[in-house]
Image 1 (cartoon, rainbow, N blue to C red):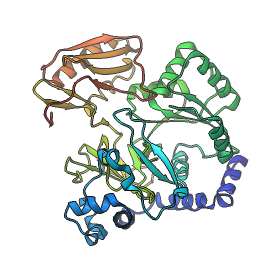
Image 2: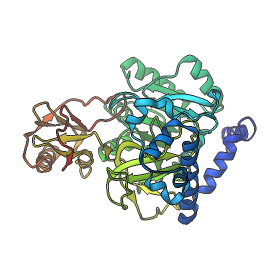
Image 3: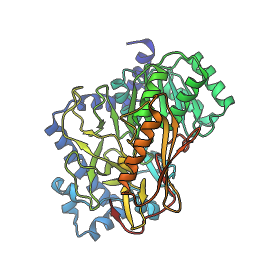
Image 4: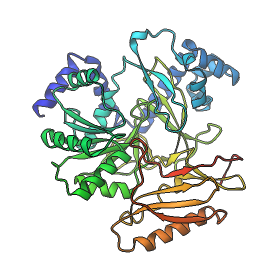
Length: 449
């Protein structure tokens, strides 16, 4: 154990003992037997749902209107049948989710970015040392919580928050670039600090990190090596993974989190999917009616934050699409596996007859040829026509592959709308987030193709 890590762990045992306790529990839980983990989830899920009934206006009304009593809610067997919570519920009345017995000093205001609609505002529970969940994940990546980090995120911290962050994470150091403002001056400053700090980890939004990697490669910029790159906020395509790993000379790891529920799932060194953090986050994949789907079947991701008692989120539908994986991971970690997030429910193409072509198949259309394009986007115009926009890659067969993928997309939409290719110089990310599917249309009938 190096000096920096020893200092951070000593702080977690003395200055922040809750950090040390939770971290120890997390490490103990990552190799629980599946039956023991399932029982832990059952008990914690039912306990949280009952607490939500007792302390919030929303859940008592939500469950009562579904014909459930408090006794029903307290039954662990009933948990997977509880009605889901939708984003509209939070937007329409987030104050009704506040637990009455939690003091304001124990809460922290949070919100989503609102990239696909109005931002959702909620509270996080200050009493929960959430950052320790990331410590466990970083160990899977071969780095430690004390290692220096280069962040590529949407907002740069204010001077006051920067001071607080520095004190909290000392003796580790971090640098950051705003994914919204990656101009030449900001990049030069970032690279200069990168060479001085020599971070072992690059962490941030996949679109921002991918654009950063492309800039480094195009301009022949030399940077110190890193041990790992962690990406989030959008599906990681094989095109992006290949480029990021080549440029940084380190493995790229996908992970799943959001503004409502931080640190939901993450990839380990086996790269067989994402381990959901099942001891603190109960992840389900469900159909439109909220019923759990078998492993391997794509559906909507629903998550329960088993730690946030200030603002309970029980079976909250995130708006993302994925599937659970039944086979165990060879890494030895027994936390449940889920597939990489395939995209958002709203990422879809809309056909003139009202049919919807779900986006999960479109995000991976170039995965078999990661060198054919450097970036791509399936863009549907207001007249329903589709442009397959792409930045050409290094594969000598690139144009042939693009033509083949265009035909694949035509087949997916059953030739009901025109599909054309469009060679472009770049495809801008959305504040660091990659958008593979953009449609100017909205469906006229809720029928999924």
